[in-house]
Amino acid sequence: MNASPTHLIPDRAQTLVVLRLLRQRRSMLMLRGDDDGYGSRWLLDGQQIQPVIAKYLMDAGFIADTGATELGARKLALTESGTRLLENGQLWWESLGLLQRLKIMILG
Image (tube, rainbow, N blue to C red; front, side, top):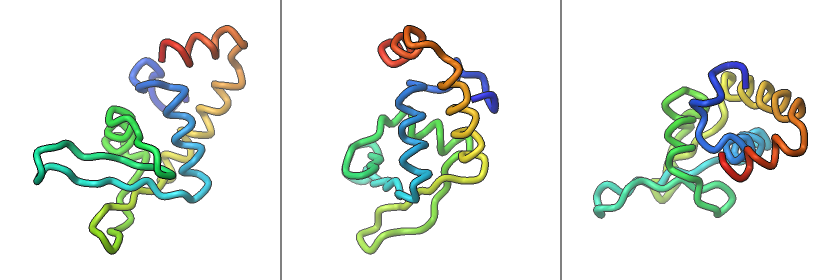
């Protein structure tokens, strides 16, 4: 993940999992919730994505809005810079030892 300092990436192991799923052409759905008093929610394969991860990926331009579903949810997909982040992240992850990976998975 050389594209940006790793200390700025929230929950690095989980962010890498999200990027891997998006690379498989799966869309992340953003359900806006401001009207009902709740915050927005992000879903990928039916599982909720941590808001801090989704906001980081959106704000940094690693995912982009690709349109709306019939029910009004927004579809988000991986951008070219998101693909580069994923590739750099995979290289970074593979360079780590078992204990380093475990520490990152537990502590973020």
